[in-house]
Structure formats: C-alpha cells, structure tokens
Length: 158
Image (cartoon, rainbow, N blue to C red; front, side, top):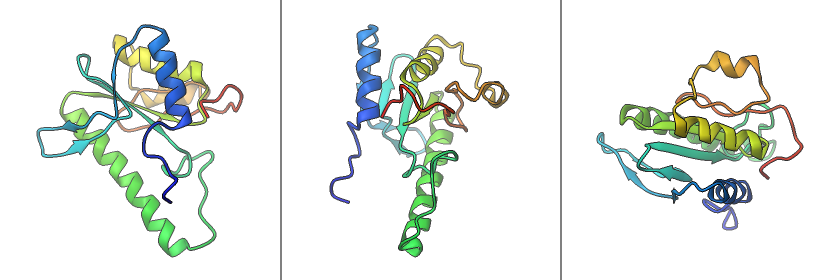
C-alpha cells in the first residue's frame, strides 16, 4: 500500500494539465480548514471561486460502474471502502455548508467531459441537478452529493 498515491495520480495530472493549458489557475492538494472544524483536501481548489474538484479512483471510492467488492480479505476491505465513501459524503456536506461547489469526477470519465464539468462549475452554469446527469450518463456532473460518471472508456483520464 506504500505505492498508492494520495496525490498526483495520472487522471489528476491529466485534468490539471488540461485546465492549466486553458488558462485556469488553481491550488493543488490544498488543505481547507472549514468553519465546523472539518478539514478537506480537494485535488484541485479554485479558492477565489470556491470550487473544489476531486478526481476519484474507481476502486478506492467504490464506483458504481467499475467498483467491485474485493474477494480476498473482505473483512478488511469492506469497512475500509465504506469509510472512504462516508468520508466523501462528509466532505461534500462540509464544503457545501461552507459555500463551496463540489465537482467529483471518476477516473474513467473522458477528459473533455471532466473539463466541461469543471468549467461549468467555475462559470456557475452547473445546475447540480441529479436528473440532468441521468438524462445523459456520458457527461460528468456537478453536484454536492453525487459524482461524475460516464459510460465511455475511450479518452479516459487514466
């Protein structure tokens, strides 16, 4: 487990590089100390616009499309992955309560869809409506409680 990266993963680097090329400036792995005493470290933080971006791995954050239950040492992994999901929900709630917009993107989302989700959140046009994402599952979504999802595997962030 020593080789598992907390930051600078390939999907995160691809998204950061693409956003930087488009002229966006941000902080990476920036610790936010929120009012309720909660600490959150988004992968990408646009502090002036109060947008937090997380690029989540399918295994570690239990992707509904690609996540799977471990077959070996399930007694260890099941509670660990459940705690990760609970921590994600708590971070979303704490950021939303502090006035931040949260963008969660799965690692398998195509780069163009991820960029579109981030720019929508930055411009304030992301509705945050889960029904919008259900209408087009190939697009990344911006919502404090949900995650970006995609049905495509070509042009992924990974």
